[in-house]
Length: 317
Image (tube, rainbow, N blue to C red; front, side):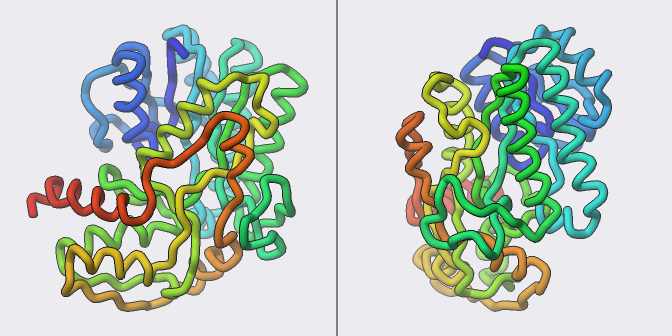
């Protein structure tokens, strides 16, 4: 990777992937882009930024040519809970935006990272140690779009030799950017509320077990996969990855070690609970470990400690 374009750079992952890549490849070689103006994001003001609507192919093409792009991290998407509120928009952005990127990649010979999600799985999928290759029958438009996206990336690789790659991200936890409308947002919100008010009302049942990942591991996974030897990638567009599976109650108990008077209550959101119940408890990510050396650095205890320390600084507490 020498000249990189990030779409959706002002979102939760993009806000941290942008400086991460700029530190690795220099500011001028990493072009951030989003449909929102730069002023609405929290990325650094150094380094190039372009306004790009992923549904506007000419905008993408112009930027690719302008900067001689050889790699795109395509992060622009509508997430699970937000997608259920406007499924037509979610399908349009998640599928047609990706199609535009892949078509331009076919013409201009650049590599594409397009993340998938645990949302590709549904109620009929094995919930424990969910296999790399298994039943994918999701019940959300976000999940449907991600299954289609995995297949579309596979098609462009086998048909046109586009070097497309992706991972199935679990819930992402970050202290930099706010959550973006996902079902696992509670795992970010809880830290802010615990530090500010010493209480939080969770929208998922206390025993809902889901795979989670701290943002430094998510960034490492994306970059390591793109830097991996292409010939070793057996599941190039859909690698299961995870760090740790835990419930809201387990996370609350870990937070209490640092904030003893923290109180957790529950007011279950039926829509998000139904989505969470349809997802796996824990993924089997052995294929990623074997093919390109995936291994997380953070588990629940280390993540909780770091989140609280970093948020105290951010919130001036």
